[in-house]
Image (cartoon, rainbow, N blue to C red; front, top):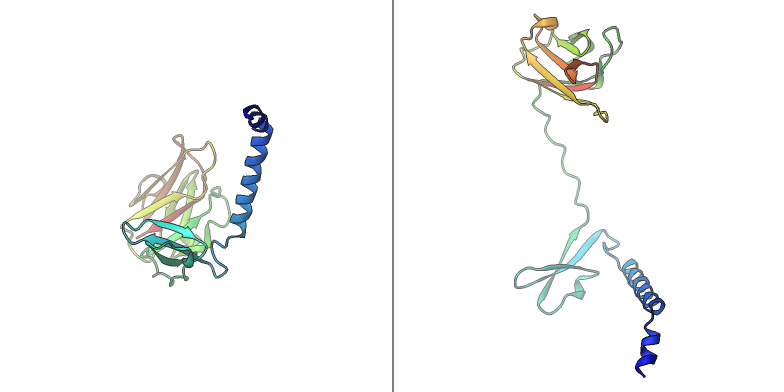
Length: 185
């Protein structure tokens, strides 16, 4: 009798049994409606300790559990307040003789007329309708293997002397033309 059981527990039989169990489990999971057709998720939590488990329906709760449901996706929130930046812009990384510098779709109180590009990696801001107290800039697109550093300041010197603010983009210490976002307060 024992040898007959051993021969039936061969590798192929065990693997076939496991595969069949996995297929039945996957079919049962696919047939289950989590989340439900209305997008809600049902669960049961224990009265003591609050342990939560997800179920197909609240009616699947045990005696020591209470049903709970929640939405897979909540309602859309209200549009937030306008940010506090007095000015912001996406600045294209064009060469000094390039064309459109400020992307008007992503700009407020900054236009091409406010930006000059006197040298590689340097942009000057002037003619803004307010006196800047702070400027923050960040790289627009990070390129693989390229480390970019952005320096920004108000009352700049060098190529931007006499201007209101400046941004400089560097890669390995060398000025480069690269797009960036700037926020000015």
